[in-house]
Structures are given as structure tokens and as C-alpha cells.
Length: 173
Image 1 (cartoon, rainbow, N blue to C red):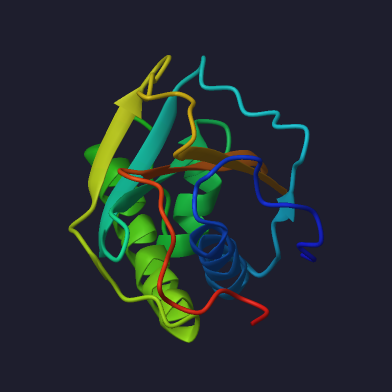
Image 2 (cartoon, one colour; image 1 turned 30 degrees about the vertical axis):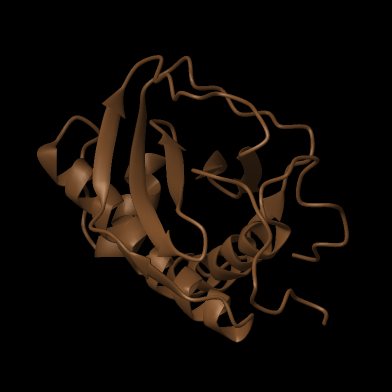
């Protein structure tokens, strides 16, 4: 995946969005054997059943990452991640989503450290259901990163508690 296009048109810190994208690329390819592709059309659909792993970060900026996985691809990703079948409605699907976002968050922290941005992650939380509504849904501190892979589409929602300048080094500097 080549990220030559802008991450988002908002005041969400670009260095954090870039670190999350880099972490996704390395984590996803290591676990699932392919690089996801950025979907600039934003074809996310939260009207159907989804499972979402949510994790927060504290440091120079307080922010959260939500990885939303639709029902259509969740069981396939779960099997590749765990090595065994997990039905979407099973409690184990929530455990899988929590562990998957936790693994990703560890890589996000490493990517942020490369950019001289300090952050600590929380324990993961999971949401699952039809028509998941995340608030705020838009604004200067909210960024959606849409991706597609062989199995289908998924997306991230990044939310900053306060947007501001980071004192750490941004990528490319």
C-alpha cells in the first residue's frame, strides 16, 4: 500500500493517522498475508452487523482507534488470526476483535515512537451489533480510514479528544 494521498482533511494530527496506517499495513500483512488497500471512496457501511475493537491512547494527544469489521469478513479474519473457526455471534468473536485491536495498538505505539511521539495504550473494548453509531461521527478531531482486502471492506475511526500540535517529529522530517 502506498500512501501518497492525504490521510484526511481535518485537524486530526496527521502524524498519528500516518502511524496508525503504517501499523495496520505491517500488522495486517503479517497476520493475513496481504496488504490492505486504502479505499478513498469511503465505502464503509455500518448499517449491518459489525464487531468493533476500540482502544485509547494517552500521551501528547489523547485519542482512540476503533477497528470496525463487518460480519461478512469477521469470521474469515478471525480464522486466519486464531487458526480456528469463530462464528460471528459467538462471545469468542468479541475476544478476537479485542485481541486483534490490541496487537495493532502495540504496533501503533511503536510507529509513534519512530516519530518521537510518546503514547500509552489502554485495555481494549469491544462493541458489536447492527447499526453501530459512533459519536461524534464527524468534526475536526474525527478521521475515518477505509480499507479493502480480499475478504471485503473494513475501516478505522480515529478520534482525538483535543486536536493540537504534537511536539514530536512528524513523518518525513
